[in-house]
Length: 339
Ligand code: NAD
Ligand code: UFG
Image (cartoon, protein in one colour):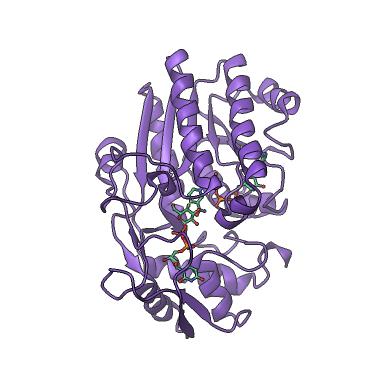
């Protein structure tokens, strides 16, 4: 497999993965509708890799346009990053989330079948485990109702992919359940560029450090965790990107459906993250303890043995590396891709 269609390839994880694909000899082709990204990302990819990547500004839900891309490039595999991902927004606009995330996947699978494209890697999420009954989370743990419409789209798409593979056994499906992606490309040329006030911890911290926000609100310090703050499994986006390359190699062995957690296997609390950031960057992060945020779980981290045993992949970077790279990106691009 060489030619890989990357949906949502201008986004945070997609763009970093495109770089890893190129570094590993793949030929990515990007489709993205710019709903949460900027066209200049393609220039950054070129700056890092020296390669011109074909880019189509189209919606994956648009069957005709998607067909044109398949007819031109005949990709052998697809990595499907395209989707809406803001948990809070999904509660306010459930129909947009169901429409975009489900319809893009259905359209993609339909066109893949038409062109006999037999490999798909899907961006799922730890959110499919719902409220964890125990940690660490294993791939065999029950996939529960997610706690919000965004998460439900991931649960539903996992089912759609498995049903499709049942009916089309030549199809290879890799479901990757990401834990909490942070960090940025070490060049400082690509990173996370949230719209408005960030919901996620790391972009909020970097915006406090650069002076855009006064202080971090720590959502609760009364959880049953060592220091009372929420614990998550933060994975460097470059590690995550490399996990996709390892997964494509696995798909070359025609495994049918495979599911992997992509995390580090290690939990980090909010206060530990603040300390790691201060250590990595020398910047102070003022914070205030606030009440718990609705819908948050106390603790969530992965067991990643399956990915290591079957893909030979494990995370190489730690949270101090990720803090350094997030800060490198934020300080070189104070307004993200808006200059
Ligand atoms: P992102 O928003 O940066 O990237 C998604 C990209 O998809 C954007 O460039 C957007 O413009 C594009 N897109 C959305 N809908 C589209 C459509 N219909 N047609 C074409 N392009 C479309 O998000 P990300 O953080 O890079 O996440 C990538 C994937 O990983 C998403 O599916 C997300 O749900 C999943 N995921 C992300 C996280 C996270 O914390 N970042 C965690 C778990 C899973
Ligand atoms: N947190 C704060 N202050 C903030 C932001 C976050 O204290 O300003 C805390 C949260 O309470 C939580 C931790 O930092 O304890 C991480 O929060 P994030 O919002 O960064 O990440 P979540 O684990 O809540 O959510 C992420 C993704 C979701 C995905 C979920 C489960 O953003 O898309 O993981 O996989 F659904």
